[in-house]
Amino acid sequence: MSQALVAVIFELHSAKSVGTKVAPRKYDLQLKPKPYLNESCDFYKPDPYHPRIMKFVDEKYIPKCTPQYEVVTSIINGTLMIRKKEFSEFGHWSYRCLKTVGHANFTVEAWVEIERPDSAEPHCDVVEVKAEKDGQRFYQFVHVQIYKQYDIRLSSEEAPSVHIIVMDTVSSPNFVRSMKKTKRVLEEKLGGIHLPYLNKVGHGSIVNAWSFLFGHSPENGSETIWGPGLRGMPPTRKKFLNPFYIGTAFQRKQYRTLLSEDDVAPITCYQGCKGLVNPADHWMANGQLSDPSTEIYRENVTRQMIGSSFFRPLPQPRNCFTLKIPQNYCMCQKIARVEINSEMGIKIAEKSIEMINNELIDNNFTDICVRHYLNNQTETQLIEYDNRGINGEKVVLVLFMTYPANARYGAHALVQNGNFQIQTEFFNRMNEYFWQSQCLSTRIYRDYCYCKEMARMEGYEVA
Image 1: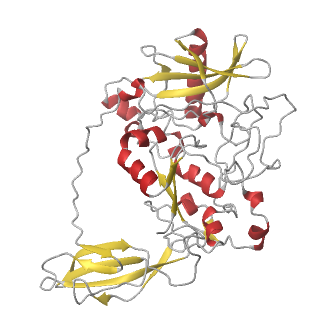
Image 2: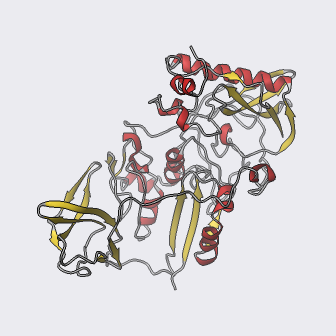
Image 3: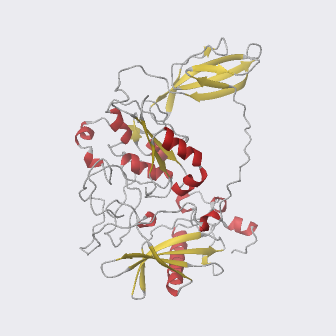
């Protein structure tokens, strides 16, 4: 029996690949010498069943979803099957292969007639099926399979199969709560490894995928008690993704690789950035591409890797600065105490709201987005962690809600002698807001926008 290693990665995942000690890079922020904590940090293990969480969880809820399109074809063990009883009498059935060419095009082969419901064996990964009668197409569907390539590869004992499964919009605690059977099958049947302490490093799924697959730092990191600020290095339309790519590393070990995504904008060329020519042996793509199989890639593999790994000596100390994790997403802390509606907490919340409103002003969104105010009808929490800076600075997280959007935000800050310094550069909204921000086409600022039109519909008077 072949062995398999399954790593399940969630949206709350580490953005770093394997790596050794990394020299300073030109895009790091250069600050004057300053003492920082040179120590590893503590963190607490989240409890997926904490009472504060469970009051919002309804395990009996089953969303109603009725398929509107009847799929009557399938590919089973390489054979294209048609399950429609009227096949021989109703219509003319055929299929063709689709093959990707470059980043935004594909070629199509000639249509092949399907003579019997179980007679076709397409020799390709992507198969389009159609059915026509009297010149009218009444059925069309695209299937994806893995068409086996019969060439030499290492045995399963020498190279066990490895599956990296990314579950979008599912945090690790939520996965434990809501997908118990899936977790049990992955761990018990497939030898899966659940990594509960992996830490996301950016806002959204794509940027985190860039991090753990390509080693990119997607967002700037503000100065913390562990080290100076760091400049992010997200891919752009003008810059190629890193030569290091985890899939190519497996290909070089004679693995057959598959990249299977459920989005038309794949991670290798999202938003028009330059990606890879062939990220896998079996894949679909539509972005500008480059070839990672260059001499510089073969000679400088480890130079492109950052972060920590079980497969290499772990650099010490281990904290959010050495692992290039922005403070916004840092799990490196333990709660010491919580204050409700404290004077310092309200000051930090009001300053944070001022920063949010200034972003709306600076980007000319005030005509369509409502101004935020502190919601005094809700609690403002100041959470103090047990971390301390060299000079005794307290590390705090302030949770607050705004009016009239009822938007929930969090702000990290350092506090000392009655003064504070906000470390958060971008305030990610922490509760549901998609329906409030549809008037804004700029995706990055939707966290801040409560559309005036929506506010009026909900009964608020806005200028």
